[in-house]
Length: 440
Ligand SMILES: *[C@@H]1O[C@H](CO)[C@@H](O)[C@H](O)[C@H]1NC(C)=O
Ligand SMILES: *[C@@H]1O[C@H](CO)[C@@H](O)[C@H](O)[C@H]1NC(C)=O
Ligand SMILES: *[C@@H]1O[C@H](CO)[C@@H](O)[C@H](O)[C@H]1NC(C)=O
Ligand SMILES: *[C@@H]1O[C@H](CO)[C@@H](O)[C@H](O)[C@H]1NC(C)=O
Image 1 (cartoon, rainbow, N blue to C red):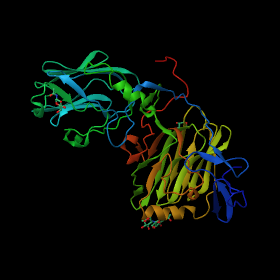
Image 2: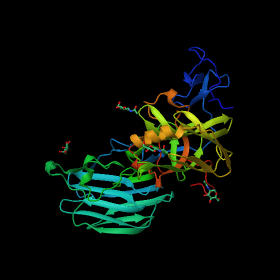
Image 3: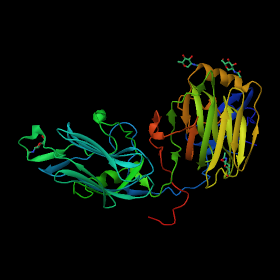
Image 4: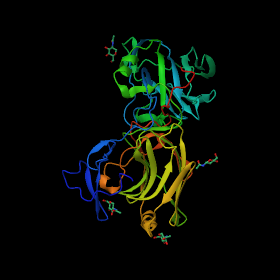
């Protein structure tokens, strides 16, 4: 029997450590705030949601995670004061599964900057000098999760980009990338104003070709402007959120600390349809995978729900009432479980391999959802519920902790393109359950 069932007859303040909820006349005590709590066996005190699949989620203090900041400033901001006629130079190891984003951005003045990024997994270089602007891409796709040595060198009249010491690009550039600034006439040094990482400044739209700057990637072994790792190490080491996981695999990782919002239109030719295809590997046994939210209500949600030690099931809720349950030994299991959910005005169906499912869809349960979907724009929330939704709105409100890939109405969600995304969500990388055999 689920701890979610309202089998506590009364839960007065003081008896229930969590929130006392009245669902259709019967009371239940609920614990889940967003901090990953659940009701203990005594039905009144709260305890932490157990971890059901332990991850190999060690971090390395000399690997800089580039995806930390979703909005705001650069991940790292460094300034160099360099002798005149210094050439631009950078070398580092780089690892990502992300196809698009900015790896490095440097500028020496308003009209002189350099950007190294990825598009379609291949290296793209954009730069502007006083009189020209260039966009070039080349080489093979490198977003395969392996480490690659990347080097960029400004030569006499060209810029050379190498991957693993092999030249992949040579771009003509008659002018120097790093110009001494005019207002430093009497100054015999150049201030490279901003070799900043991953987050170009607000005027990125001067970039000739738009790029989705957000990048879930990792850098180690720096040598910038031939200064070695100076400046970089200190910045990385001071903050754990800037460290990368030692090993990663494909997928989107939710740490259980936040959610992402997407704008999805479910209406089609006078009706609507919600079509989810998910591959999930929960690490904690309770958490919201997917939810449609309208103000402080949750018309539809799908969540992992604890059933026992190392045991969980998947439940679908309509306005907080569980209407379908899927049981699978593949939840809380190192492999990923594929689940498909289709909801239309007249049907709700959930399918997954090696599992059993049961429905308890009351008559008319879908009418209300139909009405909501036909008359409002709902918000699509992945990995949790927004703060304005009270704990009483639906039995599971805890953030999801684990790995997930999700297709919504035939669109694979790229979390770099989310309307908002919590900083803790890694859009293209998940820590594995165990380290790979050929370690590093
Ligand atoms: C060079 O210019 C910078 C920025 O204006 C200034 O802080 C610095 O003192 C100048 N150095 C010399 C040697 O004039
Ligand atoms: C949602 O909130 C808005 C603004 O507060 C309100 O106008 C609207 O009626 C609400 N919708 C529902 C379905 O409660
Ligand atoms: C179930 O397994 C079959 C064969 O392995 C596969 O073709 C199908 O896509 C799977 N279905 C789901 C929902 O994972
Ligand atoms: C869904 O709602 C629309 C508009 O309110 C209505 O026309 C339609 O008949 C409803 N569908 C069902 C299956 O109830």
